[in-house]
Image (cartoon, rainbow over all chains, first blue to last red; front, side, top):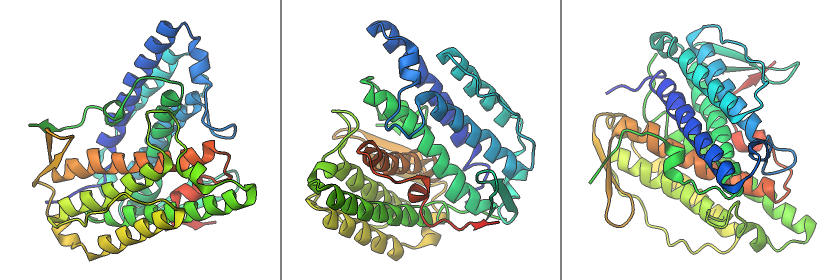
Length: 174
Length: 174
């Protein structure tokens, strides 16, 4: 009857990064059907001082890989933030998922009481206990950016719904 | 070194419902400063077939109270969805938080392997194990709606940031 930090993190990230990849497939098909340059979608944003779609996807992968690596006391790979096509964004999602699969869930489980330190801008460091970090920083930030990515595409008129957002969840329906 | 279903649910909901209440305070002040009818904000949405701000706030409280009640094997209070002012939306957030405080965390912790059944529209019932329900349905849905509420107000030009979204998290900064 236990619940673990690894269970509350790794499968959640993997599921939503896969869901985001499937949404990007639909974005590519939408752009083709409407004869829109996919760059228009990639550069769309909900407010002038919010991230565009490209950056929302990049930051989603940053949260997942850096946050999980901090909890697992591992090194996260460095990405260059140079994606210019939907295919490249999808490749970034895929390599993030592949990295998550290399992490040791038991190390993440053991991080509940451990101090997690992380940069908050150039000169500030945040400190949280591992369980608080997952619960109150990593998950809300991750969900924020995957929801924003979804909402940008809805705002652009794409016909996607909550099921696309939720992804391949373990549910039975009767 | 354990993590529990109650820890991953109740404080998360309470924190974000409080954060949403503080964001609504700022929305009221923004409307007053710009001489905008607050109804305009309450009825704003990111796409014609997405919920408006009022409904996003209502559904955030629905997810929190119904979902937590299902996990705790308790009865959730019924709300009428009749809020027409920001003050009334704030009252709904407050009464939801008060309800969450009445739930037994130990019962939620014991729900990991229990079958949780919940309506998905008028004729379909979803079934998930308690831990999957929290991890892959309740938390993503909750975060979806609180993020959408925030994003609607950002789209309306409100000067709020990630700290408003994250709320009063247990963090030390050096």
